[in-house]
Structure formats: structure tokens, C-alpha cells
Length: 596
Image (cartoon, rainbow, N blue to C red; front, side, top):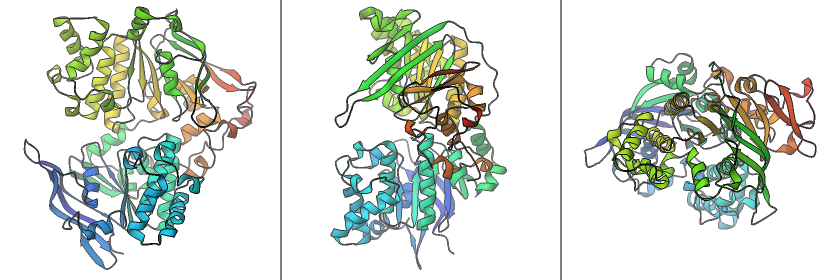
């Protein structure tokens, strides 16, 4: 069969005041009917620009200056590079024959229109069905995308859906035009590992059922190993290496691909255990935080949590979105007031602090946010961003303030000469370094790292993790490191606490947790981590068979209800259960990994 899509020597340039920027410098690859091809590379490599060129949606300064994008529409071959992006011919193909799933569904879906209307619009434009049949077909698209109640979801707005259902709604909208080629642009980057596994399984199932080709754009080589048949590696607008997934994973030739594979976080990292002081820096007991909902009963985001952080340690806190991780972090730093429980920091009652004493506490506890671009004021220079905490706390003035700002920048590897720049002129990794420097300029004792690398490419992620480890050793910092990815947590944590539905269900030293996880939810999280290894593909049938994040699905003695207490398994390993589990109950139905 001929290729469905053939790209030959594609060149894309963006006009700028400093001259043209070559985003694509003559890339070539193909997509066969029904196949999955992965475009792999870091931010700025040209992956998304390639997808925009294929769909004719390049931003205004960009234009195709050379090459071909040949789409095989039956017996007709159409060069999309020569087609008017605003013409009728391209509009017929875009959303119909070729569709796209974007990375962030809340940005891609209209917040003002119901889900059914957005899917129905695609059906009316590309399938020419009678108006009376549109709603029925929209519900069918939602059913294909895995919605549990498709009819009810038609009348929902995007903000009323969870992150996973919003992603499924965007997939349903893309499927509505019955595309021959589906472009998935980082479709699971922002999702938890268990939810990611469900979306990957869905894409693979739909590809088989509908016979469509998939162009997967990602920097996550674990995702590539589980879906792609062919891989194209991009760097700075050029193809560095391409071939079958089997060839590239088993025998990578280019140093760049080798570096990408080496940077992937793995759960078998062998690093020496650090000596951690026995003295507790922070102690929380019986923390409860309840939120009132507009519809339905109140929800306990944090439900009776006990937690201790020792001076100089890194405690990892893992769990899915909605498990209560970020709410717990806000309680610990006194950004929220608990409904019950106590918090002590260095022996002081945090909940009793007020005025200058509370401000002094907050200076000693700082926060690193998930998205550095959203966390930094775009109107402030890097110097102003780093100086702001010093101004608020009245800690330094004039030359001393400039000295401390420059020292904080150097500490995280930023050139002090860049301090007059604004956030948009920094790369993603540099922006996160700026966020880390802002947290450290006050010389805190405890730093809460809330998903600090989840928005970063794999090599930049590895650099930031290495920086955090180095800073902890040099400055004697204590970390609470929040993430949904156990492989990332393994790179920095001494102990790991697993959180689900507002409670800590398992707590253990990192090596113990990875080698001998006991709680079914922990086992599910571990089983769902995609690895950059073709011999360790996800076993979707088992991972997606149950609902490990639902406490009612857990087997005895982990079943949520009366009588659950922390069970000491020895060596600092604790689980929440009604009694010590027997050996034959330590295997959960989701804890398997196979050839997938």
C-alpha cells in the first residue's frame, strides 16, 4: 500500500526582527496507513511545528519555504504544502481526513459550549448527516472514547469533567470526522500514570478498530515504547535518526538519542542512602480538610493524615490528581487552615501563629510550582522576581539585595547577566531554575516541590532533579517532593508516602517501596509507569481492568472503612489496613507488566 502521508525535505521558517528562524530544516518521514509513527524530541526540536504544517495551522509569522507534504486521499495525491490553508480543499481535510488531539484539553475545548455541541459541529461539517442524527452520533463518539455515560456527557461543559474525561472528549471530537490520520500532540503529558495508561490503551484500541494511522508527538520515550512502530528523532529542526522502534531502542546510533534514553527516570537507580537526622522538622497529626461542593455532599480532600519530615531528608508524596497531595502541601505551609489536626514546625504550633510570627514561618517554608511560566509574573524581570521575596520580608536593601539576588541566580546555574531578562526569554528549564532560585533566596529550611519537573522535557527534567539533589546536599535543605510519577520521585526521595482519596495508604523507604510494595494502590501506580524498554511494555489489559484509585475496589484488609490503622511492617514500612495482610494477599490485580 502507498504511504498515507509522505513528508519530503520540509522546511519551515518564522519571520522575526532579528531575521528568519528556521524551525524545520528539511525533514523527511512517512506514515503508512494504520501505523503509528512517533516524532520524538525536546522542546524547540520542531515536533509541533511539523504537525501545524501538516494541518495548515502554522502561526502567522511562520511559512513553508520548501519541501512537500503529500497526503494520499484515495487515488489522489494532494500536496498540503501547496494547498491554501484557508481554502475549501484544506478545510475539507482538516478535522475530517486529518484530525489532532492537543496536549491541554481545557485550552483546546471551548469553555462556553457543551461537549455534545462541540462534537456535533465536527460531525455536521465533515459527515453531512441530518441534524436529527447528530446527537446520536455524538454520543456514539463519546462511547468510543470510553465515556461511562455518553448521553449525560453531551450536556456537560468542559469544566464539569475530570482531566481524563476532558481528554477523552477531545479524542471523541477528533474521531467525529472519521479521520484516516490522527495526530496526537503530547496527549498524555499532563496526566497521571494510571490515567495515562487508560488513554494510551484507548488510542491503541481505536487505531485498531477504526484502521486509522497515528502520528504521535512526544518527548516521553516510555510512551513511544508502548505505542509506536516507527520513530523519527528530531533536534533543532533536523531528523537525526529514524527507523523502527525495535531498532532505535535496542541499537541507538546517534549520541542525542542515547542521551534521551539515558535521561529517562528509572525505578532501578542505585544510589547510596543518605544519613538523615532523627530530629523532626515538621510533624502533622490528624489533618482534615473538607470542601463544600455546589452539587452533592462535602468532600474530604485530606482525611486524617499523619506525617513527619525529618531534618535534611526528602520525603516523596505520590498519588493521582485529586488524591489530596497539593491540598496537604497547602495545609503544611499554612496557606489553608485545616478543619482538624495539628501541625508543628521545629517544635512550634503552626496553627497558633499570627502576624509577624506567621510571616517568619512562611519565610522558612518555600514553594516550587509545577508550571514555571504560570508561576512567574511576565511583567517582571528576573531580578525583580528574585528580589520580591526580599522586599516582602524586608531582609535586604540596595547593594545587599543585589548581591543576594545574584548569588541565588548563580546557585541554580543562571548567569547573573541574564537578570534583566523577562520570563518569556528563558527556556522551560531556565524558568524552573528561576522559580527554584526565588524559593531559595530567603534561605528556607523546608522546600515544598509541587510537581516541579512534570512540565519539562526528559533531559531538562534530569538536569533539574540533579540540581535539586545538589542543592539539598550543599544547603542542608528538607524537601517535600510531590509527584504523580514514582520513577521521578525515586530519583530524589529518601522515603515515599503514597496518598489516595485524602489518606496516606503506604509509607516506606524508597528502595523498600519499589522492591516490596504492599498496598494495591501502590502496586497499580508502579505497574502503570511506562518504561523506555520494549521488553517491559505496559500490560494494558490488567492495568486498565479495574479502578485502583477507588478505595471500594481494594481487597481485604485494605478495604476503606472502619478500623483502618497504620500497620508497621518493620524497617520504617507502614501501610493502612484493618490488620496485617497475609503473604497471599500482597498481590493486586493491577500489578502486572508484560509484553502488552
